[in-house]
Length: 424
Image (tube, rainbow, N blue to C red; front, side, top):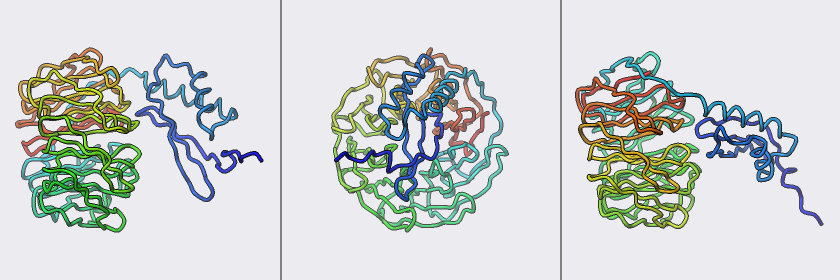
């Protein structure tokens, strides 16, 4: 007896383009359930042969038959056109927002970039309209510094705030209503993240634990105990089945989210972990450390695959570009560096800042790098040449946070001078 064709059990509904990183989102029905899956095209370039790529997609994706070949080819060509658009955008200063009474702690966009949020030592989080620079909401009721903030992207209808008052709060991004106050940590909350499905919030604390909270009910789902010192940073992978935490105990821990269990402890650094991040396809983890190095880890085995060296002082930040092909590092030695994530080759050293660089991020197109420094400037760099394209000045104190919107044509910088600046 022949087995049933899996395509008979699934009905394809529609295709959606994802520009950054390049991919195709498939919406389909399986039984009575509406589902989605993504086809990542992380290596797509102008040189990619569309016909060969379409043939490969049809061969590997059961939902897509020859019937859809022309449609998929059109999508591939549109994605190629998007990623090959020349990006010579020069950012112009738009407005300085006297956002808070005390220094800012963080800034973050919603996915479309139509709104952004700021956290502050003044115990509040504010929601801003990007186009008008109008403050839409002030989220208040924390009893201490609002240190960690996030939208539940890609949805953008909820905001989480983590505070030195040991609580995390969940808010409606439209009305400012507080849905839940998550209580349970015994020390300051310093990092948080939504999972991609927006069903969980993870919080990391100075009490050495991370916790998972249910967005709908407000209940604590799990306490993740595996570190011997403060948890400083955390990150979900893009699937949402794993969480990583970085600590002052020099280690990174990989957690299985469904079972709430510890999968691997990544040991090897000789200093505190300042940031951790998954790449897009969930295969690699990058960790930045005060030991002056950055490490790449295999997410499945927990093995260290590379130690990226060259900085002469502590690393303050590290990140992947959206395709996962590049790694950028930021250091107290006043430089940033770019590495190839596959070959581990050192590609660029970015020099020009006069003081430590605390934050680094790629634009969605992976063509520009943004750095924020305690020298009161942010800088925009060409990822291919290492040329400094712009110095974003005007702040009167350290810039500790910066972010691009989804299209990469708007950015914000946040400073200890109590202001954030919007750049188009």
